[in-house]
Image 1: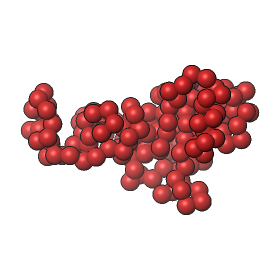
Image 2: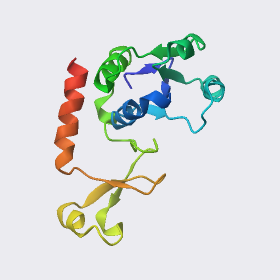
Image 3: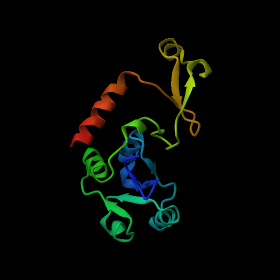
Length: 156
């Protein structure tokens, strides 16, 4: 992986202000948590215990943890540019994580999908499945738009 440090892939924690950035980082394959707790102290405790890189827009919060990155722009695309500049993404990991829950996606045959997916089943043999939240993902019409945005963000 390109964004490894010391042989291990970096893991991130996005604070409560960065939900959209968190989802896009997951789409790019970054292991990015989003806090279940609401206390800054609890977030810091988790970051310290799991050696997570904290991403925040809160300058005071940023100063409290040495392994944090202050994202200075309010725009999620600019925030992503800042992260990919520091930790270049591995394109092979694009679309490998669930944008909702961060679980690694599995490739499954469409025949295993339940009712209501007839159109998907008629167009695809396999899709991505999230064992964490039960959602399915496939390369629909939105896929090329997302990929185009990702490429634009990476190129800067």
